[in-house]
Image (cartoon, rainbow, N blue to C red):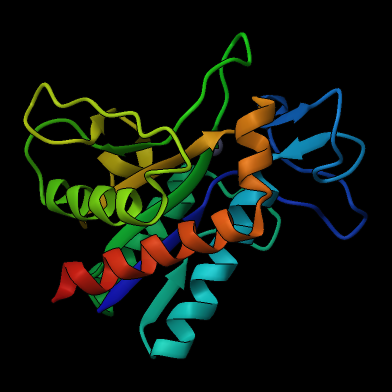
Length: 206
Ligand SMILES: [Zn+2]
């Protein structure tokens, strides 16, 4: 078992500045979130991936983070790193952690993406759909596209299209919607999102 973990975008640098593209943050008019109502997607992504890492460490499952502590590494760098280790060290699977945003801030729900067509990622995505639905289906909105017989959505995201291993990208709810953002800051929901990733990894390699 070997997993490439990716937390999308940048985080907080040592001076507390959020180093990500402007669209990767949102200020809510109530609540605190990462401070004064600001929700920083890249910071949340890192928090979740850290929880996944702790669980994998306890289980003795090997992983390699593709992201930096806070620098917003380019997608090219992340893909190059994953592909190098996949070729030269150990083949694995890739899970990229994100949260979503919408133009009118009214989008809600959870989506799993794979690259288009039938690929090795489809089974990974379907396992993850099932694990997430089992753990969180009663608390979150699960958004799917079942027109091609499975639950994942397909998109030409660079990290899915250019990586060599089965790869999924998870949009964990909409961080610019207050109700979804509040769920993302719920300790139990966060713990279950991390648990779902770990159970998916175990189930995939079983
Ligand atoms: Zn993102």
